[in-house]
Image (cartoon, rainbow, N blue to C red; front, side):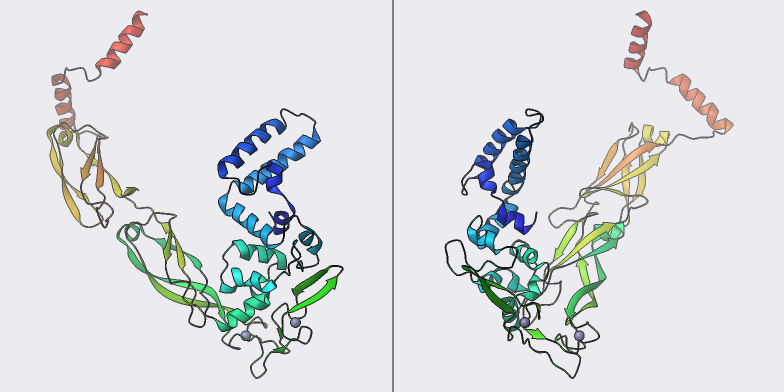
Length: 402
Ligand SMILES: [Zn+2]
Ligand SMILES: [Zn+2]
């Protein structure tokens, strides 16, 4: 969905609802139209098909609060549907809103882009208009950024942890790459010993205007790409951009109990802020390696432990490992194979309550028997004349009589 789509398409009109319609009204209108226009009901009707697509697209946007907000913003900003918007593209900015009020370019940039942060929403809209160069290109953005503090960017990175590290928590060093001010030219983009000077085309304003018919157009200066400054000898390190990728290593504490695929937020650990602004946040996507013995079910750890038939029948105390030392586990007499026993508090440590260790016992059947063992088991078999599967026996008998 491009910004231009947002500005040119009338989604409210497509669904026949007012702009202040609530979610329920939008859904109701969509359902009714989707039923009427469905291709199954209108075979070969190209007009119905086109309307169906239009209605679906409108509902896609208007049923998503975030996208609906962006759509509303785009239309409010650019005088959607009015002459201003239509006439304004593709030349550049519409010079006047539909009501004839002057369209203030500065207000646009004052909104979201000036923070230096990709906030989505308005940033995307501006990005669409300028073909990508929005944040650096806007005159107001530049002048505001030059005077006020700016928050650092959010940064995302990944970390691979062992099973134990994920369960118990760990402090890890992370190598991070993020854009920063070029150290060679201190961010000016000019070769050391030279300095940037005001753009001769826009006299340093970063924006040019022209008029066409009833409309005045303002657009970013093409000569300086909206920065208001030009560099004659670009800095070799950053090719004149003033920005380079910088690597730094930071130490972060991963809390206990993180899960594979989890995205954790470390406030203030992202890219440093500029001119005293706060740092951005760091998001770490965690990958957790599997463990040879333990599994994990939420806050509980799982473990399968083989026991002998004698231990299961007579009861026994077996020693089982945990992630932190070992514990004695009492297996009651008459424990069935596959039964799960709970060791409280030996799972994933938690602030309020720790998880448990769930031990599933499995009766190990000997593969080879010594003559002595065979004899004892044969004696056991003779002693055990009780039928262990009465339901099965009954089913077999009933089947035979049928
Ligand atoms: Zn440089
Ligand atoms: Zn210029």
